[in-house]
Length: 267
Image 1 (spheres, one colour):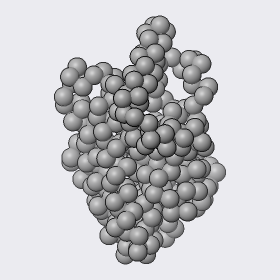
Image 2 (tube, one colour; image 1 turned 90 degrees about the vertical axis):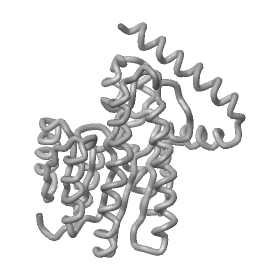
Image 3 (tube, helix red, strand yellow; image 1 turned 60 degrees about the horizontal axis):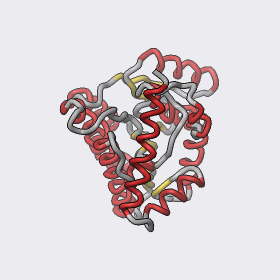
Image 4 (cartoon, helix red, strand yellow; image 1 turned 30 degrees about the vertical axis):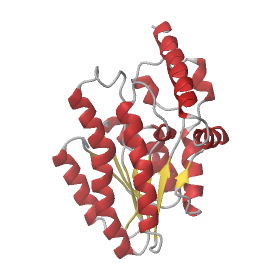
């Protein structure tokens, strides 16, 4: 790689991660794109290389594996011109906590939290030496709520929200900016992996990854620790701070029961 600024993005195979890669390449960043699906990463790398004069390095790693995470962490430590870290890798569960396989949920915790902690811990000293840095932790609006069949997802996203806010305070007198990106429902293959019909009319109301990433980068420049794209989701999060928990729980259970019924109906 040359001396240009570099961004490392986890979970860049598709969706928000892939869009971050496109947007940052357009801003002149060399890229290290991580994921597990080599074909999609190679396709993305070709697309970016054809459009922009930046280098794209592909890293395949299972972040639930400590050995593979350690290898990616070393890359973060050794990339001296690293200016941007986007911790985007993640997924969710399908059933209630006690039904889901325990090891699978531990793996989810490691991908969402252990990987984010390790990569961020390696990136901050690097960025301080470099004199500039940005860290985006892709959390979720779900981090402000409790939802059925999302025990680990909601909990880990809530952790990422608080973790990012603490780092924002700790690093406020440094040249590093930290953000918790909290998108709502997004057009990607996230829900397709859960078995939802891609033709479901509800997806028409989802935000695009391009909109979310664009808003995130705008908020990052403004040093906003929370980026919540979309007026609807800003309002929902605001109301969650004022409405009684009992009412929020009632509406959440009702919504997810309706969505689950719709999913079953498409099979």
